[in-house]
Amino acid sequence: MVPGLSRTFAEALAAGPLVLDGGLATQLEAQGEDLSSSVWSAQVLADDPDAVLAAHRAFFAAGAQVATTASYQVSSRGFASVGLDSLHISRLLRRSVRIARQAGDEVADETWVAASVGPYGAALGDGSEYRGDYGLSVTQLRRWHRFGIQVLADVGPDVLALETVPCLAEAEALLEEVRGLSRPSWLSMTCVGDRTRAGEPVAEAFAMAAEVDEVVAVGVNCLDPADTPALVALAHELSGKPVVVYPNAGERWDATARRWTGDRTVVAGHVDAWLDAGARLVGGCCRVGPDEIGAVAAAVARRAPAPTAV
Image (tube, rainbow, N blue to C red):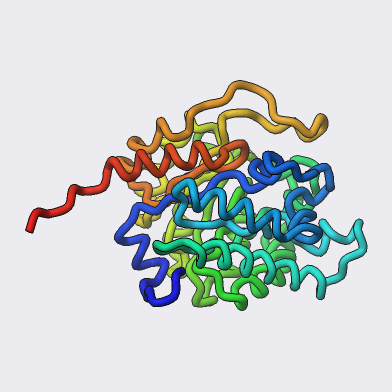
């Protein structure tokens, strides 16, 4: 947030809506970065932090108000193959928040930093975040997430983004880890229709989040835009909280070929339906770049009330 402004993230959200950024990896690729590493944009964060800073700047320049950090795939498991220990992981997590904050501080208006807490499957690099078939218990998932959540919370982001969660066990684990943490969080599931990627009723995750005071928004991300309007309405109804929604561009990820397939969708075309259904955090995920976020921001601006004549 720009120095001199004192609203909390929750206060800004209540006055919302707020525009999120898009796919950080998408923008890094557009800038010419190599994302062939098993840890994707996290490798760029380690090797070329200025590139991450430039990506955040591009989204802010397009109209985003919230920067999501490059911490999605920063984990001890993911980086074990390249020889980084927990000290290095901690430094990278902290760096991700500082870089996003630096980019925001260059913007004249209010900006916010959402620290990305990616799912367990993101560390595996095999596409299992789109399946949720981990075979791990809630206790095991809590233990695995605890270190990253604590480091990110300590460095002071405006909100923790518990994102791209594909199964109920991981949703429960994340919610229990942020309960009592005194740090605003959002929970964002990834779905097909009204089911989690693991085939469970996503309504159960939305209802679980309603009971956690730290959760300031509930919703969905990294899914087909066509599924989002109904899910936004369901999340709002069952959680009683503001809704966060940021789909991908309608394509599907082929983890074996490491490429996106299918037809693209104009994400900004859904903004009115999202806002009507209770969304207060809107943006894009994979394959959604600054131009599309600019269109999302314009759609949000058109919904803003006209200034009152004096």
